[in-house]
Image (cartoon, rainbow, N blue to C red; front, side):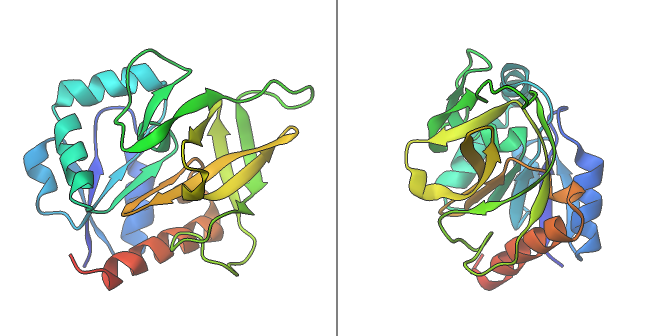
Length: 209
């Protein structure tokens, strides 16, 4: 069984993510230290809340250098919601630097009449660069979003899906090396979310550890 480390820094919806992965046959362990990461095949960085408090808690946990080392070694990590935003250099939401694992920043969603912020609800993904997370030809996928900010990568080629918001299409998912991340909540997105998690796990099984 694939052993997944679920990073616990006090700002993630761990229970629903854990249940979703366990339904797919994974062994899920809570990770609260660098030492706990080492027995894991991959990490999941969830997140609910604001950018600065999340980074503060990650620093307090002592896990920031360990997460950065993990990704520098090209080991797999999946970010979810705020967990996607924390992978970037900075955010309009706060002053603290992010993890700096993907170049770029996180911008506030554009103000558009008739489109309330936070952006909340079910939306279809708009395919961008194909990846193992969202391969070419994958069926249309409606995912559940709750967010007020969206990532703007320095390299748009890492964007594997976007979502319409107002007159724009903003980042919904990214893939870079062994880093994957979703702005939406796959664990709350019914069959489409389960299919996406299953593709990520199949990629893990196919890759050498």
